[in-house]
Structures are given as structure tokens and as C-alpha cells.
Image (cartoon, rainbow, N blue to C red; front, side):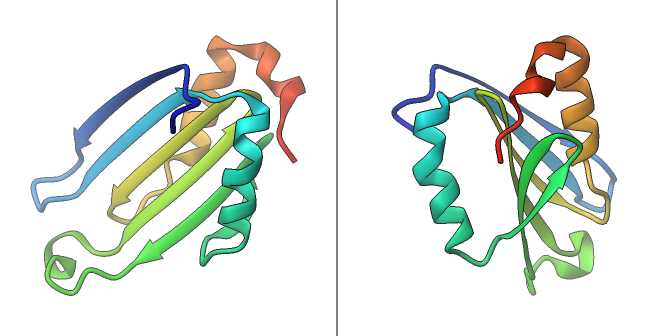
Length: 115
């Protein structure tokens, strides 16, 4: 986190039942991403991709909140020098939308996918 150059965050209520989406987008140099990615690979996160982005996902049960909001899903996405964290309570996956929007504003990042 100390190597993050800039960060923006937003939170959106999705449904009246308590579902919400929180997203943080940060600039993080590739060499600083390496230990974070190694740690995610050595954790309970599941690795995949979202378009050209490297994606790690963890779903958690929240028994006290499940009846209202369901599972909590945390996604870590890496594309070029961009690190996106999405925390979502509900049943939708916003990773593809986040990556698509990022690429529409920064098309040069597609050539910089992290693997």
C-alpha cells in the first residue's frame, strides 16, 4: 500500500436489501505488485482473468448479514500498473465492467496485462 501512487474509491448501494459495491482503483508500479500477487497466489483467493486483467477472487459467507445481502465477494484485479479492488455483497460480478471501463479510458493498458 505504501507504494500506491494514487487511489480513487467509490461505493454504490445496489438494492434496498443492503447489497452494495465498493471499488478502489490505484496506481501501483508493477514491481510493487509482485509481492502482492505472490501473496494472493499463496492464499485462499482463486486466480483467473477478467479480459486481459489478472483476477483474484475470494467469497466469504457472512451469516449475520446473509439473509439481507448474501455472500461478500472480494476481487483483486491487476492490469498494467493499475490495481482494482472490488468488494461486493450480492450476486453480480462487476470485474468485467471495471476492466472494460478502465480500458475504454486507457487503451494502452491492454498491452500491459500482468501475468
